Amino acid sequence: MNIAAILSCLESLAPLVYQESYDNCGLLTGSSAWECTGVMVTLDTTEAVVLEAVRSKCNLIVSHHPIIFGGIKKINGKNYVEKAVIAAIKNDIAIYAIHTNLDNVIGGVSGKMAELLGLTNLKVLSPSPTGLKKLFVFIPTDHLEFVRDAIFKAGAGHIGNYSEAGFTTEGTGSFKAGKGAHPFVGEEGKRHYEKEFRFEAIFPSFLETSIIAAMVKAHPYEEVAYDILDLAGTNPSIGSGLIGDLPKPVDEKAFLGLVRETFRSPVIRHTEFRNRPVKKCALCGGAGSFLIPKALAEGADIFLTADLKYHEFFDAGDQLLIADIGHFESEQYTTDLLCDKIREKYPNFAVQKSAVVTNPVHYFF
Image: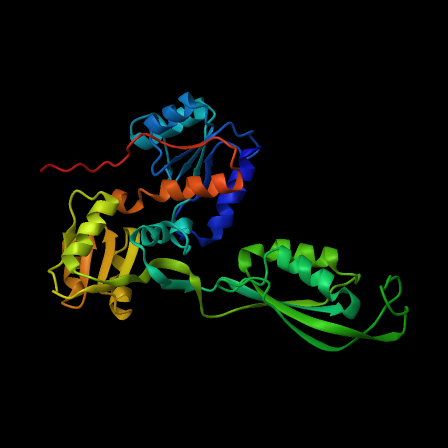
């Protein structure tokens, strides 16, 4: 199996199109055409992780954080980024980053946090622009099911937890085949009327090319009549952060105790206790201070995130308990999520989590 197959599996969970504009997700070193000997999953790619992958005979590292984030002007081993890249290139190790695209899917980084805390009724805290389009295509009656099935199989028709969602209306189409045409029905030079269905379905924009190809291949007409429209609004399943409900209200201190235990946080920085039970919890893995206004607007009782600055704690007022649980701590279980995804698709393939603890932050008690 080549590396491309593993990357396709990961991108079915978190398509690259969902990464933020400043990010650098995807294959950073190596070739997707290489035969994959094993996968090492990590939160960060350091030189130690690369050497661990070499010892474990894994030639693909899947990392949450991109080791190459900004531009590299020199590669001479003077910092941890250059050392890791040099080690990867020397040992033919491919490095793949799955960062903000994994942050921005409901089953991604924040979704794993929510799962560990037992949250229900999850929804995205700050939905992204839709990234959705709608396809309209005209299909002759006898070929409706065949063409519709091909469109669904290519990825159209997903709405939330539902698949194969579409709408069909019946009507009559007309056309006149010109000289040199080879019409499926009708005759050259004569107007033809055909009973047809107009079928419509939504799809994520990044699948447009494959969906059109599948539709055209399945369609009987020489020239397929179709339209594609961009959809306005937001996509409720794509975006930053999540908010959900606890099974039952929990005392603030008891809940922070659960958070500390679950995420193994040595220290939790937080705003003043409000002496109110926690029922609705908002969260964002990694740095999520930009979502404080969203958590307030959604009526969250607590917001869990990391990397908060001093003055950002004031943004809570007395309406919200904010807790900084640590960047590494909030994202550490991402490696479990990625391992599970690959093993689900390829149960007999060599996938392992790195044993290197890459957290650069230490605590003195």
